[in-house]
Image (tube, rainbow over all chains, first blue to last red; front, side):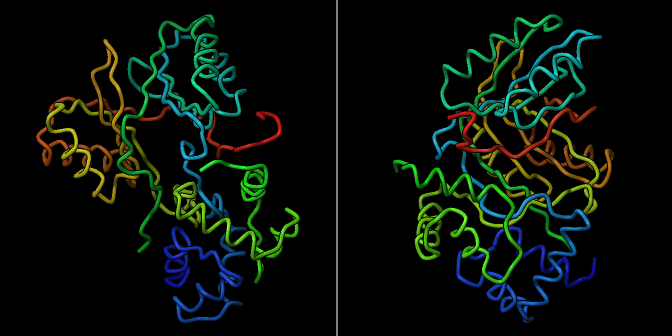
Length: 149
Length: 160
């Protein structure tokens, strides 16, 4: 990545304009032209640096309910339990982790009833020893953003 | 704000590929079947009302050099919670900071996602945060395996 690419990604991370010519507006901020911005972005995307471009929504403001769930899975059952969880579209992140709760996932549902129903099913799976839900009381920071130097 | 059917249609479309062309919103508006001006007005509205929390991009951290991360759960005394969470949020190595409810066998209430170039760097950052905030109890939840990592698809047909 060139120093220009890093500058470009720093701007793109949070400042994609909602306007008729967003990349021309970005080009102005970076003192270059629209064509250069588009060309570099296409290249960076192709090289795999960009996970997603566009709006990032606040799930709760769209009416969804979110929760972080920690599961204690017995040895030998991890794959089955993880794959069962993965089948729910609202389970967006699912990680096996170090510690006494060894499987952690986030779950978004349209309401709490739907959430409880899903968690009951997971709790009843073979190999699941315990499951706790950790509901956010307050979000202080939600920003996956990196200052590229 | 109540979301009408057009809002849902717009949000659904905006989760698809963002076109890297000179007039991306015009292209998206065409797909949705509305005018570019209508789309721009609605998107501005979502941003003002907070339904859109950011307009931009998410990078793949491994590609940009942040090869390690840890979910660090902290036990923070209730009376210091607000101050500690605000302080940790200011730290550039922390990408997420949430206050969550506890459970009988799980006393941790503050959750931070810490990013570093190595496991050792993540450990050092957590140690520094512990010192700065006078905290003694934390759980370092390093990931062993990624089973799933996706973006949520809101208002898709299947969960309508």
